[in-house]
Amino acid sequence: MRRWLALGRSGAGAVLLHPLRSAVTVACVVAVLLPYLAGLAIAHGLLDQARDAVRLGPDLLVEGVRLGRPAPVPLEAVATVQAIPGVRDVVPRIVGEIRLGRDDVPAVLVGLPVDHWPAGTTLVEGRLPAAGASHELVVGAALARRLALVVGARLPPFYRNDAGERVSTVVGIFRSDLPLWSGSLVLTSFETAATVFAQRGLASSLLVTVDRAQRDDVRRAVGRLGALGPDDGHGPVRARALTREDAAVLVPAQVLHREGVLTLHWLLAFAVGLPLVLVTTGAGLAERRRETALLKAVGWGTDDVLLRAFFESVLLACGAAAVAVLLAAVWLGPLRAAGVAAVFLPGVDPAPVVDVPYRLAPVPVLLASLVAFVLVTVGSLASTWRAASVPPAEVLR
Amino acid sequence: MSGRGPALVLALVATLAAAAATTVAATSRRDAREAARSEGFQALVGGLGGGPAVHLARCARAFDVRLDDGCAFRTHPVPGGGAYCAHGLAGLPCR
Image (cartoon, rainbow over all chains, first blue to last red; front, side, top):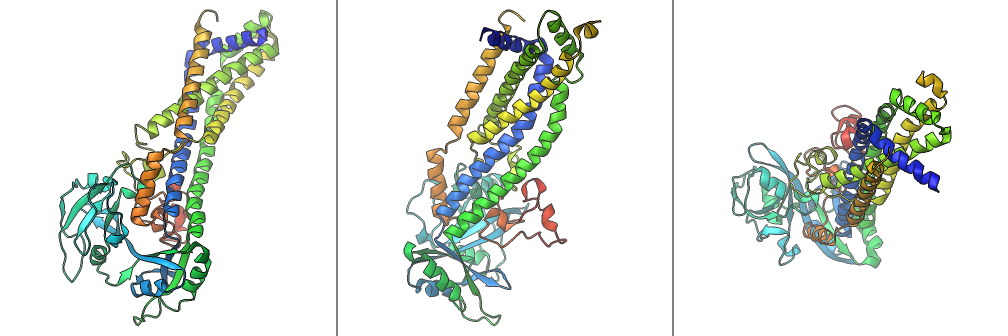
């Protein structure tokens, strides 16, 4: 035991013998691990929020289908779907893209009947829009900052409607600590959204609440509907229903797919990092050869020298992995993932206004620590083994 | 090497490791207030989002997989164009 402690102490001393080499090794390992940890942490955070989007979403999402693609749903379908046994509530929703401001900043306009909203909410600075085509909007925090909008601000008409265009009023701004998708959101009443898109009597989809026991029956009944509304001369709008269970498979799969893609990219970085760390940890370093030769000349065995290098590697790897974790936490937390969020999350500002979700899960951290250990050990042990296998007299001559 | 150097290195690495472990323990579980805000927002909008994109400008599916069937760039501007879609992570294909 005393021998192991002495070797460990000597390994710690070896870290200080070549401070530059140790610092560069740690820096290389951190450079490889940090993007991986940050990316996976964002993926895990996003997954939590994505699961909320599914869990708090409708039991059934009913959309129209035309030419094999999603199509708007006529509002007559609300009564048709409501009449299906087992259906408890049907809420039409409009979701569409709009452009705001001189720079055509993209935003997502969501229109919902105001009676769908809770009476009071703390999620918004200000208040929720009033009923009817009041042209009152709640805008996302990122959008508000980009367009310099405050509660009470007036927006000149940003849409085209032959029936007339009106100035809109910002009556609320979403808090910045809400899910990512709130940042570019514009929430308004269903009537206002219909006016903005100049589409009367249509919804993007129907949010259907059903009795749990009859969910499959309702889904089948929706699928059997001949048409969602009266014939407009272009043929029927067929119905398509997506259950919460379907969404629960689809939504996380998308995030997990991206997590896998990130891991693939990181493997490439790992492949590049390995030779780099091999160099910095000793391959070709004359100091390591001389040091090993000196140790062997004073009586150290090859296994002692290797164990010393092993302890040195463990300390460097442990330190590098810990630094990478701490830097990832600072980067994603107080620094709000500045720079990295725009890489992983398309459309997010380089300095995000909205909180970027993240969760540093233990498994990726342990994996990163293991990789750090492999990276450092492969370099130092290989070079130490090479140096230790040469007779010391030959090296010292 | 003799003296306090090795002990300092060991102490530094142990401190860093403990700080990292504490950080992971603190951030690996979801904050209850953040979860409540997320649930409140989703209840307000009827369940929206889930993808990595924050708007619909290029790919509605990347914003919410329920809003569209597939990547709009899969067949545009060229077949296999999804391979160049910026909404696939770091340039890799959307599905």
